[in-house]
Length: 143
Image 1 (cartoon, rainbow, N blue to C red):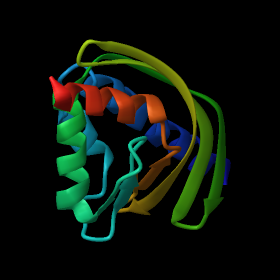
Image 2: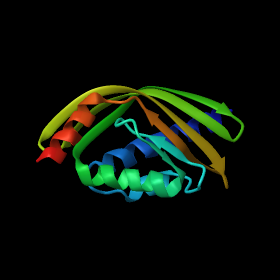
Image 3: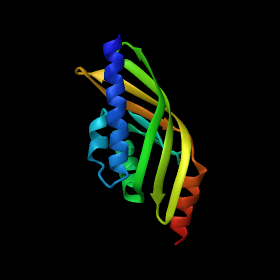
């Protein structure tokens, strides 16, 4: 069981590295972190849901085009493994620029991973809604 927990921890670290790369304009590692199936889901701090790989990928690309200079640190990561499915809970400390706005917030997050072909990849990401992002996106739309 410890081996699976270590592997899920490594998959989680890859996801957060991919998230930081995404916020620097490089979405490629994010695609590699996910199982790319119709059954994946995602909820970003804006509060919108994405269902299926096409919507999930489109949402990450949109963030990649809007966010810059992001630094997201996952702390207090807890790992729970149940066979070929695992989930993590953590707190994200986020610092990112949206348009002219430099934002900081903290979010509670759940990530779900699935092991297929011997590899753990993310199948679900859910982050608390962050009003600061919604306000920044609205401000960008008004410009």
